[in-house]
Image (cartoon, rainbow, N blue to C red; front, side, top):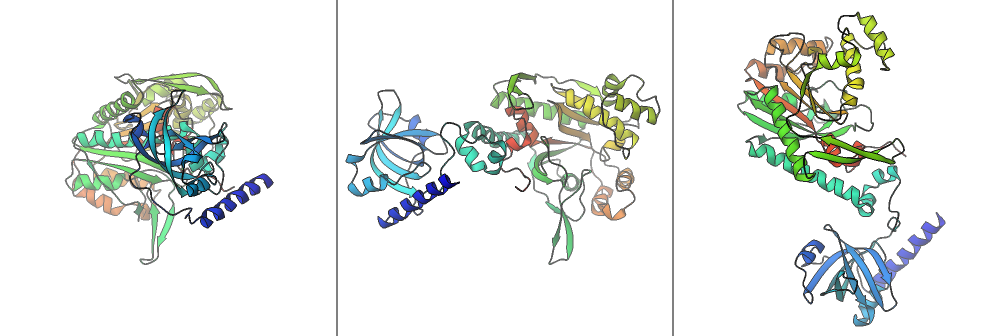
Length: 486
């Protein structure tokens, strides 16, 4: 701590010296600067260059100095001979620390070691860093600190920057894919009077002017279906959802989802749509349909390579068949008590409060979903699990849905959407446990005005980015994940 305080004191002293020289340490723009990427792309020896960036490396060779400036495109070396600078700029240069922002004018050349460089003829001080950057060679390695101080993580860990930059590109390409198929992007309320569209614990807030209790949305589904009633045939939303539940490797209370609805389609068409989307993203950003990522142990050490094959077509398997293969061919014929006992024997934790269908689903999640690596569409789930989906015409115990499982987690659910308002009311009443205040009466009224048959899908953007980048935790693909207080 004492060393840190001394470093801070030294930097603040330099701040005072800059002001004494008439320099505003935080105050000016640097118009006309090109990015490092643009300069390198059009590089020619002797060509003038104007560059601004953060000083991230400095080799002092006496009267000659080699520095690296970092901007949004990357890094570019600059070469400073202090004696060639005007006297005032020489004094300013002496006060430059790692982390400071400077602007330079100069000409381009190639060093003896072959590095493209700007030979500086003029220097402008742009902004002072009062705290030092993470260590030059080791960067920011503490995982919790990387998540808490993401700005330092981005500065010092190129892999983090690549992952989070790729996330933005994936979102943009997803939007472009749907727009090319004539889906309309829309925005629906993030504050809702009745939370709906999923079974989850909402965050509660209050609008003081209206004296109204509101909920941060757990899903946009019910509002997007209102738009089908209103005459839109293809809609989607890239939305932020909020669920007041646990935090772990796969879950963050605030997360990003794609939801899309297509009138006159069904769950099979939605499955083909999401299959096409994900494989297109893999081909564009991962070089092909076969993903190769490092495999880690519990201590974060690389122990091998994980290979995920996204080659189409992706197989389908009924939920019931998945469960019987994992838990026994007689699973659905033995008693509920016997199912609980067998689940325990299989190593699946079962709490007393679970209903019988939830016991089965725990077995599915632990013994099927968690162990599935390559893409699998699990279809025809029990109707109790999916109250917003349409009953299967041949088996009224199940609904026409898929759950897409890849790399041990659900990536996307898709439905043939329930558009029968009478059945929908019955299912929502059952889900609400008889608490009528939890029913979205406006949504039910919308259905009574007539909703076309439709397919719908959700796609977890955070989990999708984890899949494509090989990230082991959802926190690694969110710029600022929620963390416990220190």
